[in-house]
Image 1 (cartoon, rainbow over the protein chains, first blue to last red):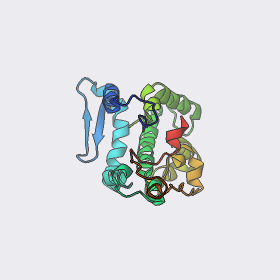
Image 2 (image 1 turned 135 degrees about the vertical axis):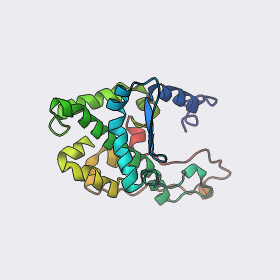
Image 3 (image 1 turned 180 degrees about the vertical axis):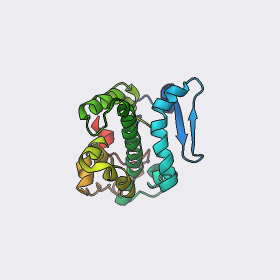
Image 4 (image 1 turned 90 degrees about the vertical axis):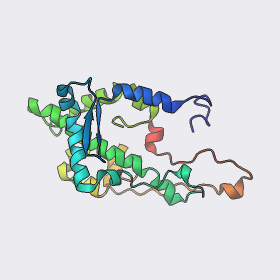
Length: 154
Length: 70
């Protein structure tokens, strides 16, 4: 789509760029299929515990309770893969996957912020300004999501 | 998410959202539209097969608020 609108050269490999950029920021990930947290070996256990565990554990519990993997794939098949012109209802469903991903990432972010604030006697409920500044830091401190239209945790 | 938590409590922000998830990124970016149950009819797509002869489909997809907000 970006190429069609002339925003990228026709031969530009956006996928390659995004993978290279995102790879720099990955410390680890949670795989709902295997229910396993993978931490890259150059990330310390302490860093993993403080940054990855708070987001991964809620996903793990949701995997056990709602079947996170299936829940995340509730949206229709990619419209580009459908031969017939899609109906308006299918267009509407095209956004479901993005919305569900945002829910899971938003919940994970909330748990992580709570995990950071709890030791100093605060919570995300009673410290709205602190949470706002932390959220700004997470979003504005990461140039990729804004430029690539991906969610901050994706 | 944090705003939802502040205004409506833990249950409404977590389990209830999983049970009744939002359908659009507009409902994510403007939680009040999710909480109010706002329903916007999808835009009608032109009948390309009828209105355009010999067109070639390049890509197709929905553009939500997240796609056009920044």
